[in-house]
Image (cartoon, rainbow, N blue to C red):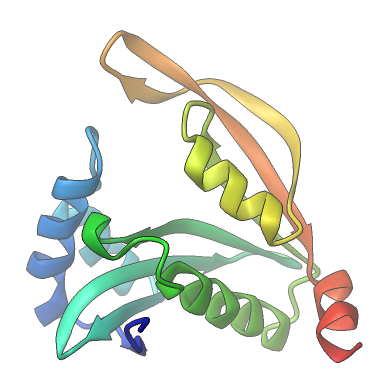
Length: 158
């Protein structure tokens, strides 16, 4: 049976837990300061809880007619359980509600699992940022991924 993830806004008290989880997931993680700055900037910061513990999180920044997904992550032990999809749908709804026409994000070119996730959810690669991410061997390209939110809304209704 899949765990039931409950979403709630991230608060300052969540930052140490989220930053520790981030450090477990990524070789070049966001710092606690990055999460605190996102909260202070008024970005949509959300945590996913299972059994009262934080197991996932995400950060969405709104721009002019675009929602930019800055981070979406799930604890390794709970991946492929639908938690990322719950967060994804939450951010799509938020973006649409705030008037975004597109959702955009960057993803490491080597992150095949994330690329497959985004492809399954209707995203397409629309560009590349050379040397965007730090990597063990120097720098790694980011692929720019986009999803028109109007198409998602039409698909959800059908």
